[in-house]
Length: 411
Image (cartoon, rainbow, N blue to C red; front, side):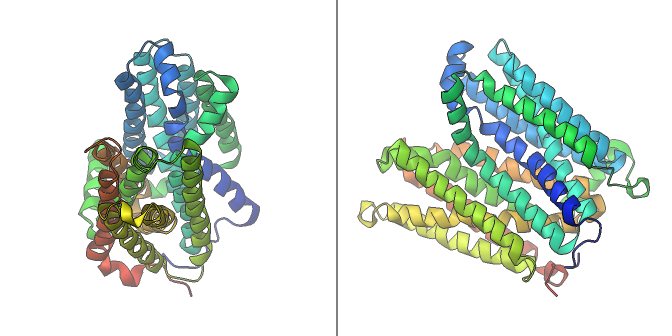
């Protein structure tokens, strides 16, 4: 991929593309966490246990992963547009049915369908962007996409809490998600054409799909970027899953102060993601990725040292390195994704599916680890955050070095 901006889209059309595809990218993580503050009310209303309610979240995340793995390769064979419209419409319907669910079992089933369709939207957004843009334009789009994917699960509980306080009903969150998807489906129908010509499609059914996945995973460079995305997201999920208990129970922060710090970290990630979208015009994408990975790994090691050194170092020894780790996701996730999609451009749908599966899969795998040890202990969270950050750096350094000459550079 060269660094010259793609001539396929520009100006107003590029702005519309950015808004619509960015919305698709954000919807999956948003739908995942928007109803979290309503868990106690949901459990009481549906006569469900805490474990049963948490299973509705697990079903959604599994659907997000499965949807990307299925819809991405299908789009390489069938084209993007009809799958894009179908996924968005199904997601709107599933969201409405979630709001109408009479039991937690029914809610869990529709949450999986909602996640599956939402995962289709995520992978298709990346595939359409890969079809229409190259070079700096693609890097800037993917920077926005990954910033939204990282910030949405952090911001969603805040928005969900405000919605619950305003309405007092957990079902309203799903009504809102249904309405958003319906509006998005109409906008996509009007604005997004078919972006994959017939002569560029890959046919062959499940065998061809399996071959495409196998070829991508055997590609050392692509696997390196996929692992980088997965480990980086695992590090972020370690923070999301553990910081509330750690900062409030162990360090004694009030809920208000914790919310402020949480919002500050999210804002830092957004700002650096936007800065990255400008930096890719002048600097090599891979160099920005390595800088973000190195800064994150160093900060994560400092975090572990600050936690293990005891209370003598104070709360700042935890807050500062956490801020650096979270903020650098704005450099890491976007640039690793655009390099991975570039590497798998011959099967962009499959490549996007694998990258998305690694991303959400990393979050699924590490979340239980944060709960190990005494309740509220900061060490499990610090180790998960640091492990993900260091592993992401090693994945890029050890597996992708042969692609240095091919990485996008500013000219």
